[in-house]
Length: 160
Image (cartoon, rainbow, N blue to C red; front, side, top):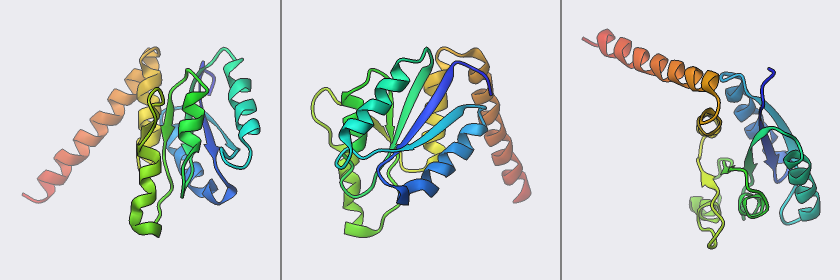
């Protein structure tokens, strides 16, 4: 997949790898390249910054997706240190009554990562942002939406 877009998925720990791989699979539906890295805002902040800086030096359009559970500082940390969009996609968790999601939602002034809860939503949001400057990607998204509409219509017909 050769284009000027890349989605960089950064995990807080290796335990989140399966979640990241799901996002990467959905990104291939839009023919988007992705790279997966592990860097923690809490345990390896300097390394996380090195990753961000290395991608910023490329001439690509970049979306960062942060995957971190429990106390998700990663998304806000990345967002505060880059001018490229950041999407939080915290892994599923039943711990803490689901309240750990709040660490992905409440951000200080000037820090604004988007937060979505499902891997397919993270991939779609990344694709939509990149499509603002990529007509081919815009067409892929339109096709994707048309397939969803067709499926709904077929489902409706099947119950009539």
